Length: 107
Image (cartoon, rainbow, N blue to C red):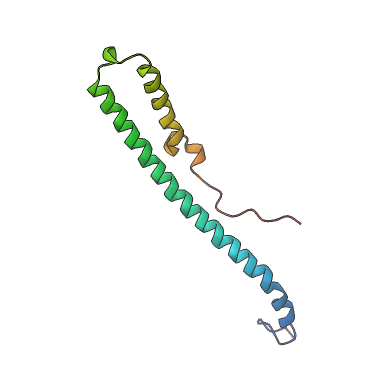
C-alpha cells in the first residue's frame, strides 16, 4: 500500500520541527529583498546626484573660460570631475548587479 501524498497525524511532528528553519529562511529572503530594493534606490539617487554635479561642472566651464580661472581652480575642477565618477554607479557597471539570493549559512 502506498503512503498518502499528504502529511498524516503521525508525520506532523517532523514537519513542525522544520517550521523554525522555514521561518528563518523566509525572514532571510525578505530581508535580502529589502536590501536589494534599498540598494537600487540608493544607486538611482547616486546616479542622479552625479548627473547633477556633471551639469554643474559644465556650467562652470561654460561660465568661466579656462584661461580666466584663478590659481588652484584647475586642480579643483579636475578633482571634481574625477570625484563625480566615484559617486556614479553607472561609471562602474561591475558594481551594479547584486547577488539575488542571500548567502546560506554553512554547517
